[in-house]
Image (cartoon, rainbow, N blue to C red):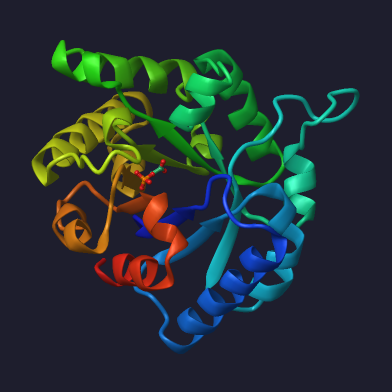
Length: 251
Ligand code: PGA
């Protein structure tokens, strides 16, 4: 069965105490008003263990925003999927465009991270999406296809079923520009068709595909109403309780 999800991506925001306070507020909110969608908070690493304690037994799941591509050892500054899991998180975002652009993560490394995360019991929110000049050149469907083929499609089906895909057109991230609901729908349908070609119709129908990029309370309902859009990955608007809860409730 296809699951609806709204995930907040806090990015590099909030110091420890502030983040834990925010996690407590969201935990209390969604205990009182359980959402129709799965709610996931993807926090910086330092918040994970504390937030896991707060969210335990509630209706909000926890995720990290990145992980190492190696299981353990001499990789100064890295955090492994096993460590993330041991801190109490269930999800990890892999392949966010900020990781691809600023940290030069390519599809090969993202594939390694995805494999390792799944082997260590995490579900992966795998991001894909084109930059502005690729959309203008009309190559966006090919760009996303390559990202999925190289990043994900060598996974066996049981591992692939631990993946949620997030389509995030890079030109819409943090810019205030949003893909129109029609642009989101046509790319989500393209992604689902590619998944069906690789893993079969049933797997494609079960797959959760999120939209991300300047999602806010005023546009979420219309985007989420499209048949192939199963929720959102929310950046800026996930830092404000009223905005994030309104987006979750527009599912
Ligand atoms: P935004 O970010 O909602 O601030 O555009 C989305 C994301 O990068 O996941």
